[in-house]
Image 1 (cartoon, rainbow, N blue to C red):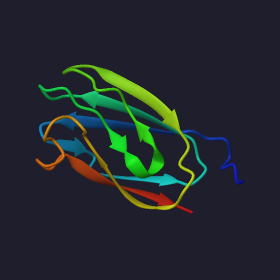
Image 2: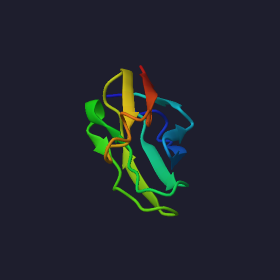
Image 3: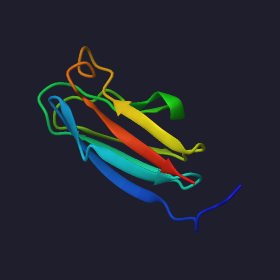
Image 4: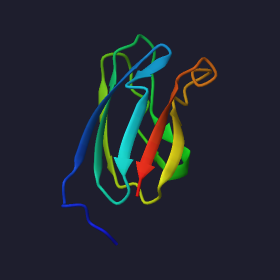
Length: 99
């Protein structure tokens, strides 16, 4: 187990129709992440990474949800919004977890 200096990486992600900003994220394996999803769109949105087993709540327009997690595997994963057809409409991004 490597603990990366005990620092928590803080990230704010904007969700709107039908995109995330930024569209790419990079985390370090074993480093805690505090991610805040901010819904700047009109529809409800969430943020999901299947491979890491993490997701925010589905939040309405104008709301935020903050989650904390520690990525335990390196690789490149897709994150997406699980609401309706949002993912099919292009609401996804790329998450890279480095060793």
